[in-house]
Each structure stands twice: as structure tokens, then as C-alpha cells.
Length: 105
Image (tube, rainbow, N blue to C red; front, side, top):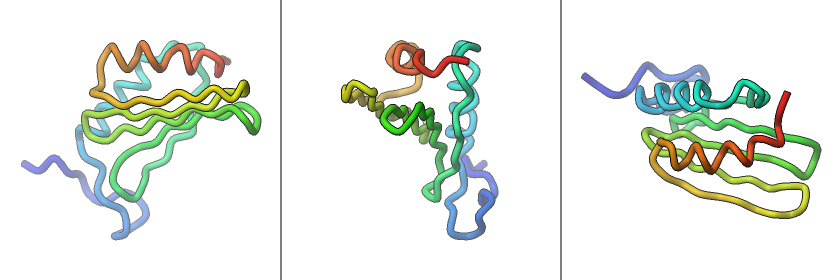
């Protein structure tokens, strides 16, 4: 069986979202504390998901889930920048939760 689903909305110019990316994106959201605001979710043409949290013009966290890997980048209003990439798991979660803690409901 293929690891690919049908093309995502957007037509033929979008690569299909893999089952791993879909499953891991759901798992990521399920693991976030309920106090963190829901992200803006985008399916990107290359076949994966990007989650974004924005606070004003100068504070942003972007998390991309592609297959079994998460990549993240954050810019804080102080100018501090954080970024990383790794397999989905506890280590990535520990890195993301402090960054996302500024985006609470």
C-alpha cells in the first residue's frame, strides 16, 4: 500500500500529504497543552503541513511536519531566534512547548 493519500485541495500542483505527515501533525497538536492557542495550519505544495503562531509583527513560531520529522523556527520580540529539526518525539516537544508558551489563550 502506498504511504500517499489523494492530492490535497489545490489540485495537481500539490504533492499528496503522506499518511506519516498527517498522523504526526495530529499527534503534535494533541500533545500541546490546552492553554496554547490553536495555530494557523497550512498544507504546503510539497506535501506537508506548516503550523504558525503569530503575536504581533515581531513574534512568530513556525513548525513544519514532513513525514516523521519536525522542523521549527521562532523569532521572539526580543530578537532572539530559535530553530531546530528532528524526529517527532519527546525531545522536540520539550523544545517547542517553552517557545509556544507565549501564545496562550
